[in-house]
Length: 329
Image 1 (cartoon, one colour):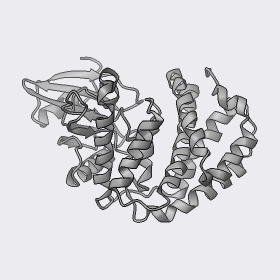
Image 2: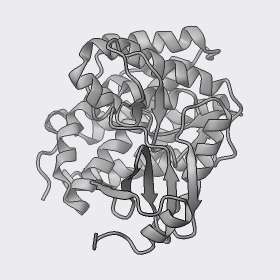
Image 3: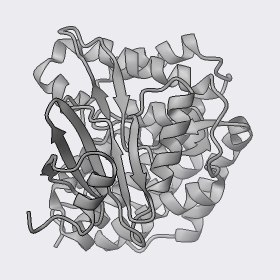
Image 4: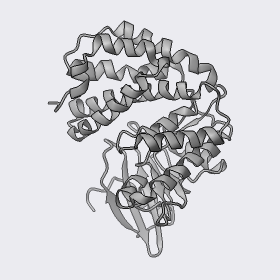
């Protein structure tokens, strides 16, 4: 194959997979690429995340942490991080989102297992990862004023925006110490059903966790239950949140922090999806913004988000919030 990255076949040979079949997997990332590797009965997944644009070491570090703490991350077969290569276990094709499209009867047990996995993860000491601190929260949420507001031709008060978010988020900072490992993109597209039964039960595998930080336990629950890419009913969101609260040693303010981080994450995603459409020409992400904005409006209704809700009322008119901006050119 002429389009294979330089060094791929020599890496496979050094890993004991010389002569294996190589199948490129279409992806959305700019520099990271994936390949399915087959050698007789053996199969594996090859990631190419070449420096300087990518760095596979965080993926390797988080995978090892997860494996050491009872989580189902892919086994690492071989690695050459300096060249961007990581050969891992192949989790197959059954992403939770796709599988549930075909098997809606399995939704509740599949989500229950995903919640239980977070309960188990949060029982473990956090990894040695960077903190999910206020500068990080603010840098993320500012994507909304950096990308969405200019696209909508809105002249907004960015100083008041920052102040409102700092006021709303400050109370949760003490409650995320010492914190838990936050995977950050824990949702139905990044959970693999390794051997799903007809009712959705079965082992689940984790992917796309290389950006893990140490932060608040509510963040990954928000990511799962306020999914930007898949409709999660209000009833399922409520029942799964209740499931977590019943199993975890959650503080009294957990639901308020859930709303805080839901609003923060959803504001960030609106900004990211606008950027993907405007800067990168990926228009398909715009169709997801209404789902994200609807969830953010629910979060903003919580009293804990009062300062932020008032900023939205003053700076982004309701009719604009209802239309979400349309196509971006």
